[in-house]
Length: 479
Image 1 (cartoon, rainbow, N blue to C red):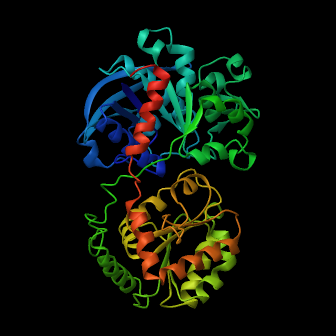
Image 2 (image 1 turned 135 degrees about the vertical axis):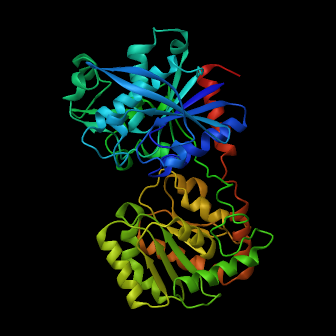
Image 3 (image 1 turned 45 degrees about the horizontal axis):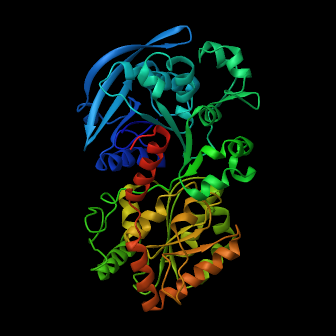
């Protein structure tokens, strides 16, 4: 089995969100299971120079795109056991920022075409291309239109299209159809490209791919609902026979309290008392009152409505009226940044508002906090709750998407569950569950059990990698 993972970003080269983490970790997990998985992504200007120095030039090729024939350099790098191909074109990728440029439609049409064209120039013939999000939505369409008849490799090639966040669909003016995409108007009007009088790259990928996945089973069901689907619900209901959800994992080597160099003191389930050292040092670092018996509730998140910050705003004074401490790390919408700064001024020693992005501090918070609050309106998968569990920090989540799939409510009667959750998007339901968690925190026997359950939860890529392999086998007929 050979798989080419096609992504606009991948750790360690480029990351703007969860997609970068997935594209860096899943291929490595597949390789460990004897799947020949390689990754292709653009060679961005912002890739660190020390990584560029490790790349070697394979060859150049010319990519046909409408009336153009564009240069593309193929570079290769190896990270661990995984080979990465990085596609170079300075006109498209030699600029700051991965996305948000005026010509993104053309940039990622080029990348999609180049990823297919590259297969004729490298010593790797994949059985499956696993494409990701709107930036690669044209890959299965271009494969079907231009490449199926070129040779046997393209004829047999299957495409899995993974939706990480349906909110971002790659929507552009129909003016690009002939001049940028290089297809005729019938391709647009015929239905593959057109959606709501625009070109929609994600819609194209959904229709043209062999199979569609998304990043949790619950999210796979949610995106058939208008509330979550951002207009694509009817299409996804239509295509539901080829839609499935596979929950993400995390890199359990990177996120390991036994070895994480960011921590004040390393610990494990066997040395869980050392977690208190991290808590006391975190309190000292953030100028909080040093009280080991007061629970720290953490929020490590983008500060936005979408992440449930409106719920936090509605009951913030109620939360802070209880004997708890609140630590926040993140940036986002102005009103929430100001709300948290004001709370830190009003509750000195009780609230720490860190309006910034800092990986070192994030790891210290995951290790030093007692609970992680994630009251998201929607969450395709979510990584923070899995990282928190790895560090024995108990997630409090709303039951949506991957949060519902990875966090099971703690039931004291039988000692099951690894966190706390609430179903309705309601601030007082959230407050009730927070207070339930705080009450259990003060019962040492209960809290020891829920911490043990959380730290023993398998949040690795082991299970998801097996599910992807089963899917690849299904659509290729290979064993």
